Image (cartoon, rainbow over all chains, first blue to last red; front, side, top):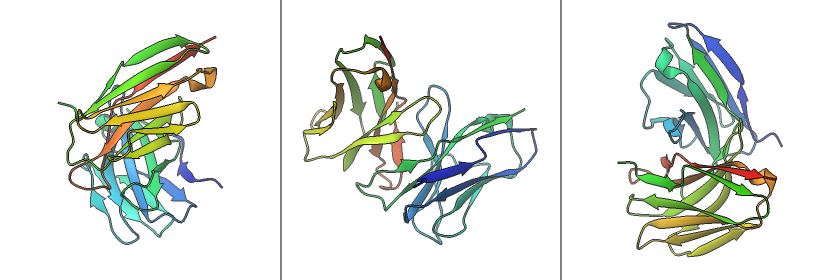
Length: 113
Length: 113
């Protein structure tokens, strides 16, 4: 099983460009999440989708949009990239909330010049 | 003030030695506490999830302890191996929602031969 797959693995953008980060899970999980990880800081939640058809804001949603395309896929879009969005982005999934573990992809390393 | 604080920030030990990592949290009410391992360039992987009623939980050479009264947890690694070199992250759910996790900034462990 692949688990959680993120594409692309690396990307360099210019300020103002847009792009979509893709995430897919093959574990039939209900919930999916997008995080960013910056040096010296813990992972911070951008958006999450508790179940197919729902999305909610996390701690740092400004500048991002998400789409829960179906149960498997959850995408993150940067409409107008800014240097402050340079980060490593992780997608995760879980069967549900509560005491269930979240399973993470290996990240997308995004640099915005 | 960070709601999840970990110490030390970094640690170097010799292969075969034991070590203990600390986590203090301020979030309440408390439902569970998680420890994740993150290898360089990879996504976090769940090691343990402890509920407030559990004092100790083991996963192979990893043993997590929890004191819900003092809001402290520790992760003890026994007979360290080179593959234990990674960041270890303490995580608790937010008061707002069990879907929202609060991540510590991690302890970076280096095991030397």
